[in-house]
Length: 68
Image (cartoon, rainbow, N blue to C red):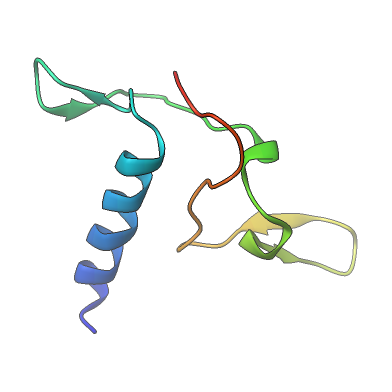
């Protein structure tokens, strides 16, 4: 799969998961939108040995009602 195509698919999933992510009038993504960690499953993260974690590139928020 083309890398760009994969990110477009992840992007589309984020837009579906967060209803107000798009500024409908302008057709653009709101700048500086953040999603709290509680909206991601544990498998959405890469866990490091020093107890740090990093959200995987293909992670999509799936837990709870999301709005901005």
